[in-house]
Length: 221
Image (cartoon, rainbow, N blue to C red; front, side):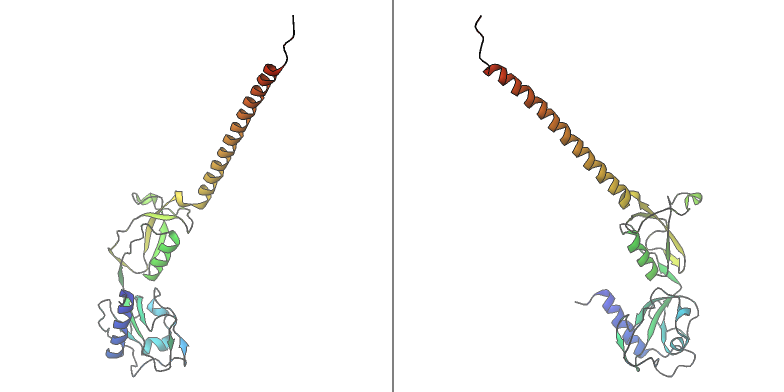
């Protein structure tokens, strides 16, 4: 069974063949190098596309309907051929371009995963202490392993590409406090084991002395 991502790429590939050329010059597919590898343009501004590619590629909106001409603004959300695929000189290129996206759900992801997901949607993340007050939206320290516990823009809401989304991360997932907690636990176990060893040693010494006194011969009066 085909995955949703594969279906989208197949649909885009079919539309690339059927849609009229969107560039200013039109007239056929982009003539790239023979047997080249397709670069990744997803998550990048449409203005970053090479000029010859912009003039020859097909451009479609979020509804997969062809656009009139090559857009100058917006974010590339999907591309055909896919990133990393081998292409020949006669390949047809198509891009889905959008000026607004649905905010992804970042909660539960690591900060590194959330940043990658935001980048693919032409957004960026900023870590904030809380989402309540405007004065609280100053940047906060975090690590890529920190977990996102809240986001200031609701998942699924429409947001313009290029905007920032504030997220709150859990400090409990920061590896430094975790290592300190593990070290403190190991030290506590060591002290407990040492205390138990001393207690048993004292008890053993007392029992040994009592046994020695019991075994000692009694003196006659």
